[in-house]
Image 1: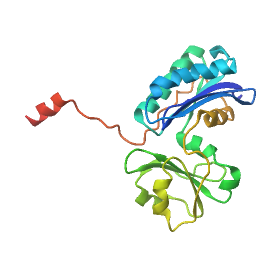
Image 2: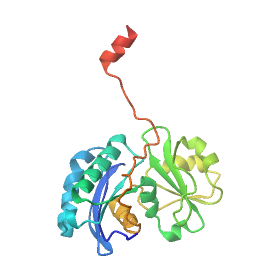
Image 3: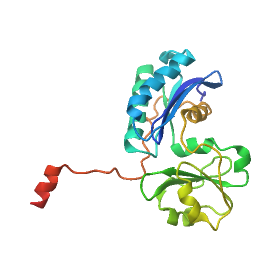
Length: 232
């Protein structure tokens, strides 16, 4: 299958919001803001900005790439819904990238040599989102949600390299391991997502849209009226 030459990438799943355009074998435009909330207001203006800076019409896009989690439920849904809407309007395929893959792709080859890379992402709970990769960015474990004190038993042997916005929460639990912290940014970035998507074949026409990767159940608070009826 051919690879996309011109694509729009976006991310709103974690503690940032970003959009980027890849064209002509390189990054053409990028917007990035770290933010705990507010992605729904910033994502579309960012997309409009990068498309204008790149000088591309939406009809010229070969694909749209988007992170599918894990991360905040609202952020994951916003990103996927926006990407699906644009893909339908542009008749372009969707390429899904996990936030683990995005963060790990920012690690320099020299840092990763001889080490397993641990992508450790914030869940805003006691647990962290975790997945291990080898130095060539191939997955060694399945994505999981795990307590830091339980992580050591689930990791591959040998030297480790930590990356991600929750890596500091795992260091104490791995004090008996040969463990280093990467200098790579700990947040997903549409620029990284664009480069990853540009290296992958276009999905076939019959492919299903990317599914969200949540790893934990949503927090649901029943309405007060329901609580009152149940306790009556």
